[in-house]
Image 1: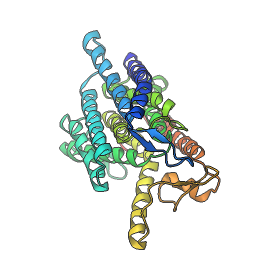
Image 2: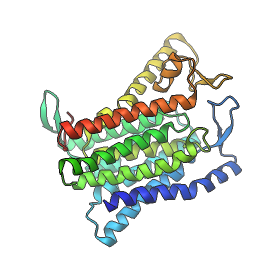
Image 3: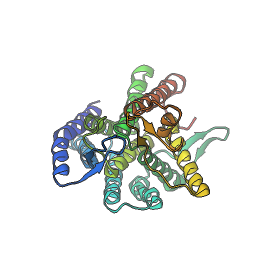
Image 4: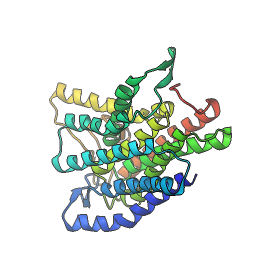
Length: 345
């Protein structure tokens, strides 16, 4: 358990220690963005997610150091693969923040960050599929399923954001759900935490600590915005953890809202192309602080579309509550009704 605790505490303290200074430096150097969901449209330091990335990476490095010098019982192959993938996702996010890639490039580039997970063949190629039964995908698991799953999660995490505290809040819920899944399965069902589950929990714990530290400054009203340099590593970390632990069932349930958000995005793209309307990326704040949206074209526009009294703060809180109910409901269901192990359903 020391490995999990170390990853969480180190990443949390790292973000809390360095983020205030980073916010000050970003503001002094004019690296700011408009907080578009506020009526006064304040300028907020942007790109602060590089501190979250640093905290996440440092937490994992500490665990690897403890494993090397203190002979802890955690294996390092999965953690090393996740570490490199997270760093590559952060580099892609940093480039995107400065070069503003096209939408197609934004969606495709995260595929590059999955290469470390592919070449290390992280995960278990055997899955139990509904109706079909148990299938061993062999080499195609690493070459096809891992990159597709990881790219989807990274892209979906990047797309499901844009409001104060939303991305970091979702990361806290998802990563904590994974850690609880591992620990409760051990304590309640008497299962020994296996090497893969331990590595998954370590990666998730590092993300959890970094996201908790970041949301303190990112919650409404935000003092800093993450940028793609923060959002892409969040997605890469949770994707890597789910793949390392072979938690496909949990991943499917956890990312239902993200999948719905992606489908709504496609629907909006087709709607704009068919009608010739202008593409709108953000909601518009009214004078009373409530949000006006052009339609139910993202999952975080659904509530403002159907409710005239929805503010940014209220919208984010409801979305986080729904995600928490979904994730922790899935965790409890899989622990008490399914044995901890591999497979989809």
